[in-house]
Amino acid sequence: MITLLLIRHGEACGDSHRLCNPPVDGFLTDLGQRQAHHAAELIRHVTIDHVFVSPLGRAIQTAQHFAHNRDNLPMRILPWLIEWRPATQTGECDESQYEMIQHRAALIRPEAAWKTPAGEGTLQMAHRVIVGFVELMQSVGVQPAHGGYLIDQSATPQTLALVAHGGTLGRLAAFLLGIPLTPYAPIALGCGSILRFDFIRRVDTWYPNLTVSLPEFHE
Image 1 (spheres, rainbow, N blue to C red):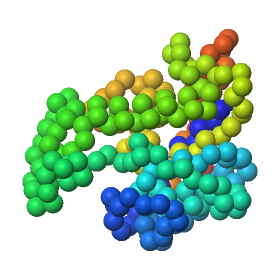
Image 2 (image 1 turned 90 degrees about the horizontal axis):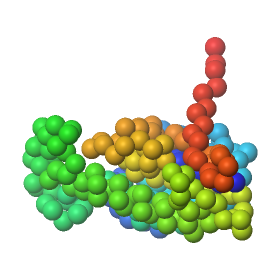
Image 3 (image 1 turned 60 degrees about the horizontal axis):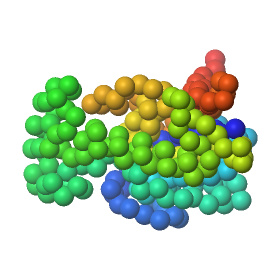
Image 4 (image 1 turned 180 degrees about the horizontal axis):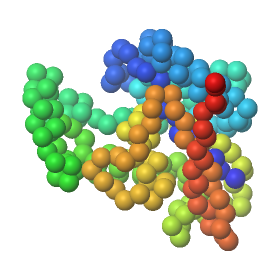
């Protein structure tokens, strides 16, 4: 009844931390625009009911490719989909200090890197993404329970597209697959890539099921 499409933006250019409202332009390279267009073509036959997008320009410009030719399907900005926030964005340092802080953070072993001076910590980001996702699912009649989800009888079949970033979507995908929380997200999405999750019923509970599609083969 519920399908999730997790879509990473195309290759970015411009201000990587600028908050925007649609429509936007100038946040994707030429390659990034081709990646976004190709991703939209791959699922052109999929009916999308809602498009949710990060407030950063590269995600919004990518989402515009999915809204195009779908009667300008409206996009809803969700702040919790924003990418990992560096220390310059969280107010922990200024630009002049950041390169040194990044260098020090890179020397910390992963098991000790739940939080570094470089910015938002793993636990902070996971809390932001997971709480935001659960609230989104509840808004469409899907409640977490029994290690899966209960779907309200009044809920209608629908497909939700979430257009965001590698860090945000990697963390969300790991949560959906039940992968334990680690200092670094164990799932990486390439620019313009799509993960599809359908919810499979087992008795009265629905569980996320990842569909992996192989690219078309060309000799």
